[in-house]
Image (cartoon, rainbow, N blue to C red; front, side, top):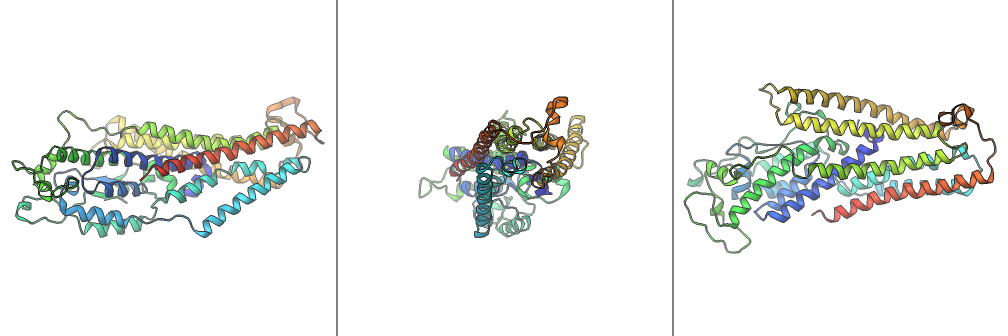
Length: 459
């Protein structure tokens, strides 16, 4: 389904890629600006690596705050960070495949522009431009190297859990028990999520996990930030004891990080009157930026194909241009439906619990979320066939018939077919083809350039 969804909606594929990168950059910057507590670097690495799986935090007294505060859990953070630090990036095979695609596109364009009069209706520049979005998407994911292997992530988590400890009333006696219930869970159970798409690890489904991930990352950041602020003020976890100075100014003495579950919970608690939002800071701004980048890539490439078909004699909207227009429009609609579905799912997740009845607003949002998700996937299947058929019909000269060549869709009763192109028509077509080539290549290059600029600022 991931391949169908990617082909069916390049806008959604581009959005999932860009929002993943923006989320990584956002959490990196927040930690760098405000947090210098032990294990902060490992926490950022772990959070960035776990955007392919749904995360769940447990906030009772003995769990996640203990994971952050207790020095005995330093090994957990270090080990888990190292275990998830595996990459699936460039290989000779992937680089060669992309190089061949680029070479094939260049040869297609060169052949089209070398002789405009030769088989003008079945040249490959339009279809080549329509598929050009694939290159920045594939290259982008190779550079970002998402962690899509759930079993491997789960195995890494199980290994790290052997090092986890929780606070207890016996902590002051030197006994730190192992964590019996996990503080940070990688869930694979359908009852733990509102949208089943959250459980699917291929990168294109990151759109469905983005809001939940940002909420989890924001909560993790706030706990680390509160601990950092207390440590900077020289306040230890345990009540009624003095701050113990460490050997270096950049480290915190382990005695300052020991305490009972109640003391740890109080240490990490928000100030009185501060309400935690279900929506992470700046989340809609990042969604808007990712949406603009994805739509610019899609319409820069599919729009270029439409431009080629529009200006090829007979000009305006015929079968070829209509096929590209339908593909682009359906792709945008699918992106809108699935993105709206993820927003509604996250809204209803604020009230979600297997043991309580959801309020009417949450139930309504959940119903609409499921409906939009299913309809969006169905349209993605249809649109992937539209893309394949548009390319097949173009190369097989299926469109080379009176109805398609006369641009009936836009000219109506005044439609006509060009049998032999004039020099002026050929010159106009060639100029449009060059413009479309520049448009498609610029869109792909700018998208890749932005990705690399943002990648340089992550880490």
